[in-house]
Length: 410
Image 1 (cartoon, rainbow, N blue to C red):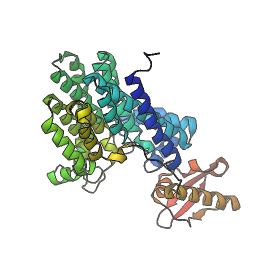
Image 2: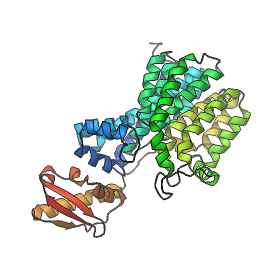
Image 3: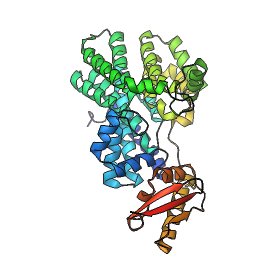
């Protein structure tokens, strides 16, 4: 019994329970699809898995990126559960919880301090992603952390390489894994020979992605994914992702840190965030997800070990980094979610109109259309949210200029 009830296991249980509070909050406030979810759903209903793999890997996904693992996860959920939001919420939550616990074990393995590992895993846990399409961030972080753990803790280099490969198939930022492993090998004076296959795989991946990268560099400045490498743009984006208090803490840790070797980890974290820093028109907090895991690793390696005399310093860091905001939100009451409400109102109106006149050719949407409702209509995914007897045999085309939906018999 004493082998089960250990300090480390208690911390793992506490992390699990803390993460569970986010799941409860998600069930109470975020039971709906949003933003890009609708375009992915629309694609999945019209294409097979084989078609998706071939297109997304070799031609690019809906936005031109070459990645597939997150979409395969989305595909499985869609085939099994359709547009029921609950499985998508649980799916993302499982990845979040596993990622938090893996970070705890990684920090504990590297520095042997369970309390510090717990504190910084809690900080990482504070960036909980509610958007279903954030599965890409969840999965790439899962593969990256598991690859690093397999390399550092298990010494299973082949498994680590395979997990790294899966990470590359999930999102480009997985290229950070060899950088982290190199940094750890240098700081711990380990052999670099096991990293050679990682370098070859990374080089091949960069060559594979080269045409895509060059395409993005030549985008119109107004495009969502256009690139701007100017210093003002990078600083503007950096202060969006890392608020002044965070920057102060990171600078102080870098200056006061006794183990200077942790600098390499900080550099890797910032390099992982770099693709988001050079985007011209896009600032999304989910880009911070994997870099935050690396920043927490850096802070854990840099901060003086916890003891009774050092608790004021830890308390100061906790409040500077957000204080109460680092802990799960609590939904004491359920308020109307206007995005979800608008989605439901539009589909209910369509069901009512078609039910009253099955031969209707156009429906004028009279209720207010919020952002996600417009995306559902524009993407062509609306039929997935209608009863089968209403959607069957019909196709729907949205006309934003008249806020109406044209109905065609298949």
